[in-house]
Length: 161
Image (cartoon, rainbow, N blue to C red; front, side):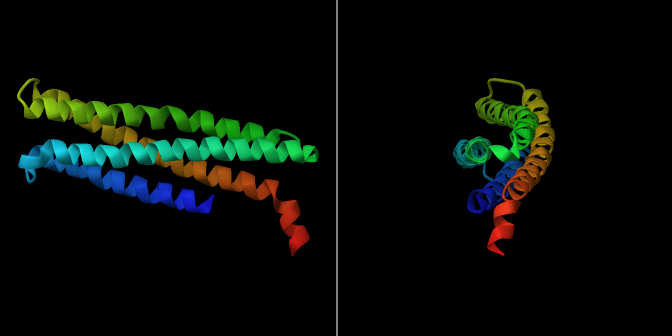
């Protein structure tokens, strides 16, 4: 669990740096000959990061459900909390992923002179906004799921002490 959570944070940080570099590359053309290659490379990392975040919470939810099924004395309030976390997490995560892909596609289309640059400006700044919004929600969700796991296993941890 901890390995994947740390990996999520690392990939999200690299994705943020890549997102900023895509914007800088668009405006200052420091990598003009390889713009599409650079966009594709950042896209792979960005989508891997967002997908890993979503799968982390899917897996954590399954583990919590299975643990609570094995320990019915705990009730299912913790599972409801986890479900609530996922309900808040998924919309901004999916939105930033879709906006990012649209931004990269429009950046490539603009590079070939087929669309107005305004499309890139609009999508890029929307993507930045949703990236920060999604990252904030992802951090809160990681904290929430960690608290659920700690609360769920505190009885077993006390037995081992």
